[in-house]
Length: 216
Image 1 (spheres, helix red, strand yellow):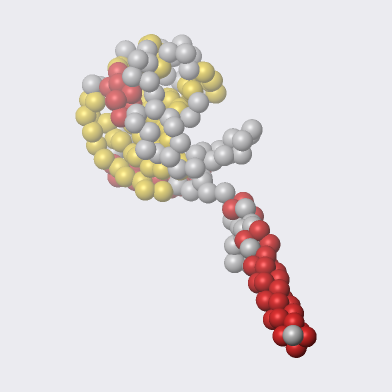
Image 2: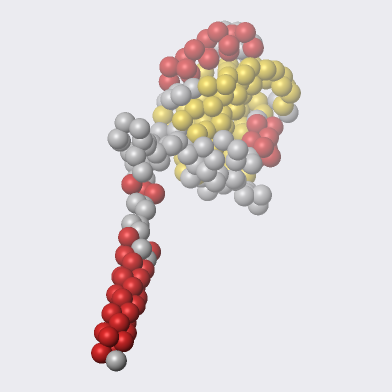
């Protein structure tokens, strides 16, 4: 009977050891015990160990409202004042020399008048205006010159893209699309440049403004 008791005790101890080992193994492989949290996305690094630069914002909001009201602008000073063009009501206005600029948020209307001996052509804009803008506009690209009809007659249109100046508060840079119309009559040229974010739906507003130009 004593031998049978000793044998039973040994078996019991072996079973207890096996159960204890199993519990310990289960705890050491639990998710909370061994899995490390992935680093946040913001800490991702490029191959050279530095943070990736912020990309240029290419498709920001910039649509001019459909209910925008337009008012007539007639210059009263400068080299030439013999024209009228409609501009969006309420936009901020600045003047410098023969250039008047209207701005609102991300959109701009720029009007420049100057004396000119000859009328602009697609060729003259391509060979003189495009190189000048290439040196003035950040990341100037995709220039296209054509002749189009507006209410005032046949005009030379230059379209292109460029980066805006960095916002002084947010530091953001916006990719802009430009439409530059060159109007001419009797030794006077008026350049009307309309700009806003790439992909903003401003086709109708820009058409309203460019079609409103008239000589006085």
